[in-house]
Length: 319
Image (cartoon, rainbow, N blue to C red; front, side, top):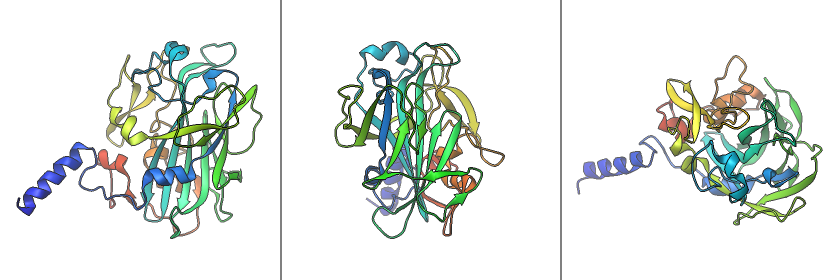
């Protein structure tokens, strides 16, 4: 086969896989990087409704039946992840899903179907295999909170709340009972508490006081992202919005107690100020974090691995 034919064949395979020609491989295996930095999760638990699980825990990819299907779904623990890389940093994103955002007594303004809160880690490429953690951001409802692991990282649009808590090198987070907002500092967890740590097994906690449950990582790029065009009532996502000329869904489709109130990973509009847009926190994290915080040099905005912007045809000057 002639070299040009090989190029055409390889190009076809890459495009069919959603990568495109301009996508160089990441410098570190994304899964290994995500495992290395995976958070220890202190989850407040009043009932099984607070257990971590997958979006398709009920065996389908329909968003607006997750509330009804909850009692019969598989509550094995999973956490979604993504890795984006610039010339100087890794941005590691983790998303925690619950089928219900609830209260002991639900009202439309208190509860809603589906719930996805997230964590962003900023890791400096310092020459070591997995880099050095500099900062962590957590999402809790309508706000993003900034924590630092490097004293040289200062406030930007966001103020620094406190230092990152570490357990054997893993950042520690605390997740609210009922509403599931995430903090990087210790909070009062109502009722019981399950402590999740990353592992090879997706376990169902033994009860509301399980101090050693294991969760598995699952990639956003291979699960949720390929379904981003499934928009509308009775599908996975809803509330389409414009992201730099591309249509993306802002939320999961949901009907119970409030329509479409749970954000997709790329649908957050928290803490965008006057410089960011909805979706930047996930899709353009270097730009978002450079706005949220002040990082010491070097801090490059040029991506060497960002498959999401690559798929959308929005990469500029990088891979």
